[in-house]
Length: 456
View 1 (cartoon, one colour):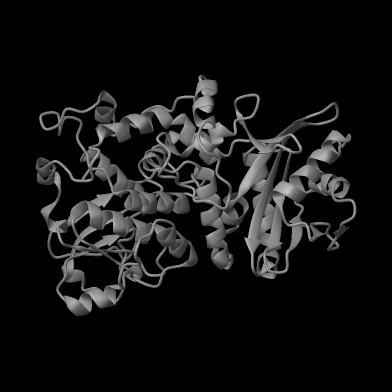
View 2: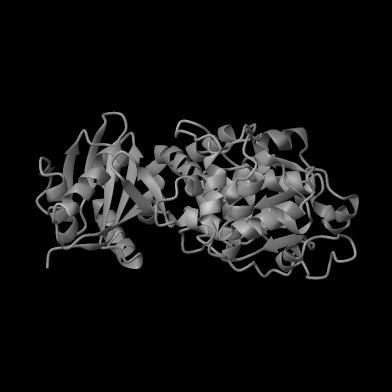
């Protein structure tokens, strides 16, 4: 059910950018570095927030599509973020910070075009599929955040009910708590109340992923972003289908909210935002599209998020409780930051990823998968060096993964008191050093400024 450019021209009087949004052509990102000083002055007058505070603030009027904190802490060159004022360290803005700031103007314009109240114009209902009204929206087995967040969003949009196909994981539990949402009931509970309830499958369409309690004859719709492969559901009658090649199913739901000029409730917007961040690996995964990036900026504005990076980091930490199931790509890219250096002997970017876990041995045992992924990520992002530190948050100890001679050389100089922990020189015992901000980056900075050079 993709929107047509002129569908609403006689129904609404809305801004021109909103029409381009309806035409399925996402606005071109604009570089926000120009004019950053005035924006920073504006943000600087607002109260600073420590990392212990929430990543969204109801008191802020201008959230800069989730980039308010990045602007408030802008470095002297206008393109970095102050990281440690005591040591004069700045870091490059993360990918997700750049994404939302580059789309800030479009996000503002789209959000401003929506009704200020959550209620919608009655005539909009004419364009919503009647089949989905009062339906139960349910995701796949081994349910994830996109399944749950998308189901909650779809239920709010179409006027139905969200349900769980299976128990939520730690990341989904974090998002529900962060946004003050009640956990939806299980599909078993819903079907016990109403065995003939209409069902809309979200985030899947294969019967192998469908809860076995669902009767395929009661399926009235599918909203998904996956390929149509084997075991796709077959029905005896036409059903509503919305499948788009985007990075997250929640992006589809959020886009439908906007194209129908509906403002999702803040809590619902927050859940869909977290779902998109999860499914796209903080907008760095290979399936990420321009739509995902734009929708993240828009939802950040609607959900009043000031620090999108803080939200993404906290969510990844929640996911770390179940890190054993994450891919090597997810572990290396989940919480990664890069820093630029320029000295007489070295010029380049150094990336530093951190995985915080209660069981570091589980992660370190995957060394054979992680090292090639670090090398691939380093090449893809054109980094001079890339480290991955595995931190045990219970015993407060760190282990550094070294993917090559450059990393080994820099680590030996930065952490001269630490020892290489294996014969292949790919692990270093960092002892009680567990903080990237306080332990890792200052040591790396000192080593580089002291004359370290990349080995030939």
